[in-house]
Length: 220
Image (cartoon, rainbow, N blue to C red; front, side):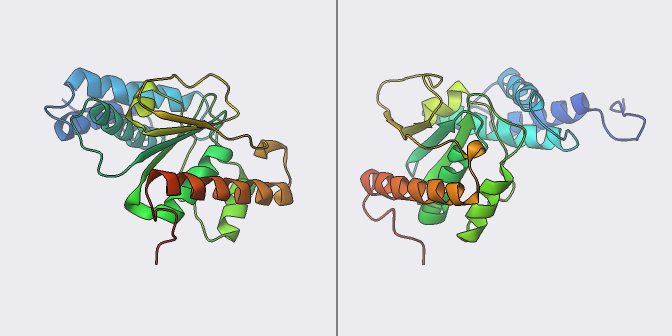
């Protein structure tokens, strides 16, 4: 039986999502059930669709988000190892501060840490000014997009850094929680964004130094 297609000949979103769920169920076989994989895909798609400005590639983005959530779930259950520290950055819209912190961390530490970011009320896209001031520093956001905060990524994190999102982030024992008091990028001009970028870099360098000696040193 052929999968249903729309008037443009493309597979319907449900068909694409079901196939994505099947791929993830195979990839995470023995770690999560088929039902969990399917629920993760459809929940991820629905969560992103609430705020997405463009839906053309949303099923693909939803699969990517679901994959990361299933990795986090397996990590929190001890089914996948964590060879490097896991850091989660959380702000309100995941369009400014947390995106900058995640990008700067990847730039400084490379694959010596694993970074995630999320928002308590994610926006439709990353702020253009944030992209611009990061590119000035030689840091590119690539295909990053705002993501809703989910329980699985919090459970998988070793350090959770919040930035102006109040008590939206659940608390679990054995994790390190930090709150960075930073100006909201949505209210700032480019000079203000540059100041926040530089302040975030100072915080990130300190955090990396505390997580493991030498992590803050830029990659050669």
